[in-house]
Picture 1 (cartoon, helix red, strand yellow):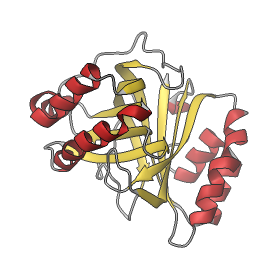
Picture 2: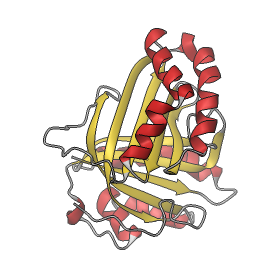
Picture 3: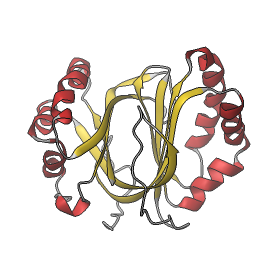
Picture 4: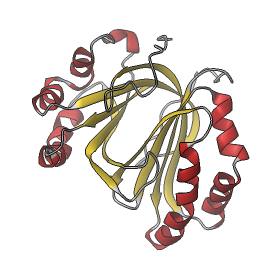
Length: 245
């Protein structure tokens, strides 16, 4: 199984087309036979769990059995037409959207997203020195929202300067209580140093269990196969191209 994570940035003044796309895209994605599961999401401003929306930036994640070598990786428009069809690609082109897509392969993790869990059988173990992407998402219990938002702020602030972090995006299906963070790290070792050695992060992980903050959660690590496109004029992961394995 593979996963594609696409971020689009609309030009200033194009908030309404961005909002409408959340409804217009759904039927086209639902009838796409190669898509096993998808989510259309808004974005936060600070690259992690965030209550402040970025109205220009939107995200789409989907899981599929469509192999990376079945699509064209050298041209983002051809890639998006292969993945999503002409409607989405034409829409993004019409409104002058900047786009970036990461091609990923789930390697390890647990949990569900609206009952969906990717097939991890046969996935090769991640090596300490290879690039890794991490998805952390949760449906937060409404009664736990004040505690959650009070505690995640310091972790988000520390994450920005974490050694080895290349890029992160805070995304969500709904404000405040259906949130996710996608983070990209230069290697597995750097990610583990942040996750297991930073006290603030360890405390939050402990408290999610102790106080039962989440109604549903998913944590996944991915092998990074490829990335293409730009955000704010740059390729978020740098100029290095990752081989398609």
